[in-house]
Length: 187
Ligand code: GAR
Image (cartoon, rainbow, N blue to C red; front, side, top):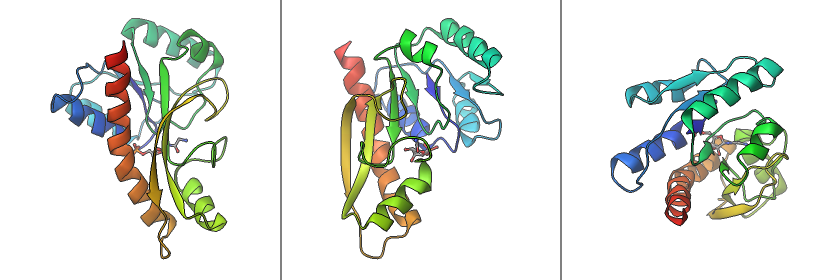
């Protein structure tokens, strides 16, 4: 099952990989904290259950989240552009079963405040010659769980945060399905 807050292009990449028989899995559902997330339409187009949790972070929301997860009994939980912190109770309960995709070469440009274009802007301001994306396990601390796999992307001299973001995102769409396939095959 997936968590997503935004457009859901990574979520879509995994839906496509399943439909092309590249991954043998069923997506049990999508949880979002944003009722306007593009990911919702993608889920609906593929008959995937959606749960919208408002007030993510509040105690009642954590309980609702736990009850949804218990109903869906996921083998793997994938954060694909999910911008809120997962409650500690849940990271502990699903230890080593929650993964996240992040648009930098962690541990660089990780942690609170580093998401989306903020990451790419910081990479360009630092003058880095390369960037990339990372899939890692989720623990109680933002972007600090064990790294599973990374893909490096060159930073070009005329890059803007938007052009760099697009090049990294294209690699994310390969990296995330490949890690999910690898993890499910290890089970
Ligand atoms: C992706 O670039 C993902 O790595 C990033 O949000 C974007 C979501 O795009 N995630 C983070 O920054 C998490 N810290 P998408 O909605 O099109 O998949």
